[in-house]
Length: 289
Image (cartoon, rainbow, N blue to C red; front, side):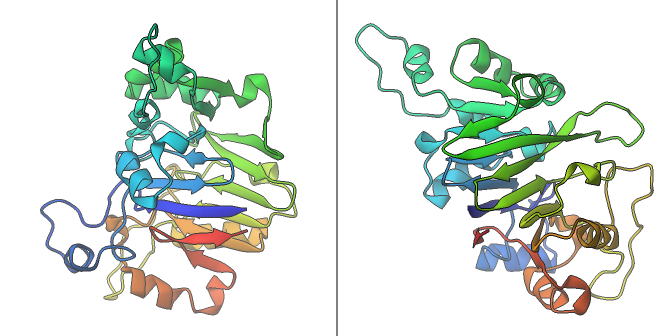
């Protein structure tokens, strides 16, 4: 199973517009891995995009995957850094026949949006064109909690629902469990304090989790840790989750500007014993699970 990380910056990419901090200066000068955008990854064997941030059209094109080879989009939740680029699902070349409209031509090669009912309904509110795409047949829809697991090319994909707000009682986000017959990968991308770890199998090969917020900055300064009522996790809480879940390897993403750590500083941090089996993902990283 091949995984390509297209964007690992989350809600605050690096560089931020107008920011002249050391992280942003380095990112503008050197590009990735110092630079980070959006929050999405790509599974080339099934032409599947996991989330579509505002940067998705650019990220897909730069990665060489091509928007025309996009068969699936797996949507975890409605936040803009995960859903703000869903219009990419309609940005496909259309080989229009003599008696067809553009929409009819695109419907012949419609990608499938894969998510849950609650996530889809909330995403329609934040990305108005999404419902139009589905109604017009430009995008197909597979709701895992209603239609059951997705099967494609020997793969199975299951939903791992959870609430963004720990106290809401509404599963308005979902992770995904990917199984290609040889390897298993769980993607639980963001705001996952209330994620039910018991929903994961015991023999996971890999996970993609949020990095969480470090309590300290490289200069020794401290930041406020997320509180139990918030969806965010601290970095220490994410590491503890990795140990409880026990995958062969964990890739941490959602490393935004607000975290305050550069790529090189995170690479050095990952060398300590607490990060055994843990890697910080970066834009452009390609791994085999």
